[in-house]
Image 1 (tube, rainbow, N blue to C red):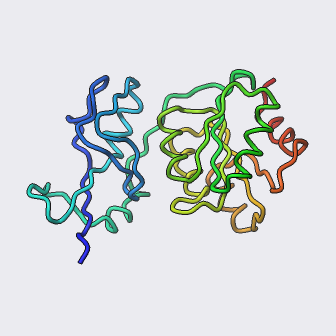
Image 2 (cartoon, rainbow, N blue to C red):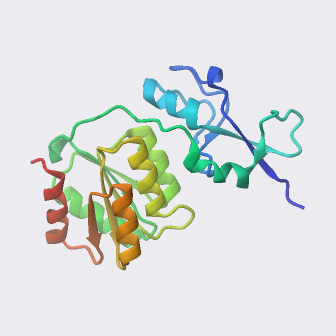
Image 3 (cartoon, rainbow, N blue to C red):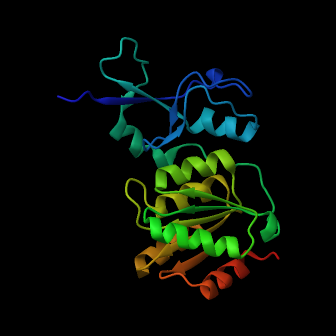
Length: 215
């Protein structure tokens, strides 16, 4: 029988700015956020880890904290956690903009990255799934994010929700070949800024970039 995964909130005193993390941390829904030994120098990132970070344990671990609960129970607390905002970052011209592109389909990912390079964006970060996209956003704080809606493990809608919770000013565009009415309504409730329909064209991308609002 597989061991039961238990989770417990991070101990705030263990997480110190500019010092290696003593253990890996997850969001309440089980998404890996940061690894043991990583160092963070920004106070708002430290605050996220202190207030929203969770440790993971096995039921067979020798020392379990008293507040450890099954992972399924922790996931149900995901929407009830304290809100933490990352520091506001104003939008900059496209030539200075850092963009994150997440898509589990390699051809779609490479196409969008190529089109963005043609628009002379400053730097592009790639992710091939939703979990990786969330981790990259937390670590690198891009000001523009393109998310495929349908990704395994953690879909674009959930990534959108978390990104906007941390950073409402971040420009987020959902990408899909089949944007349903329900998806559109849900995305708008989370604060999505734009939609890009597959197959992606340079003209449609230009329209999205115009919504970003800088030259």
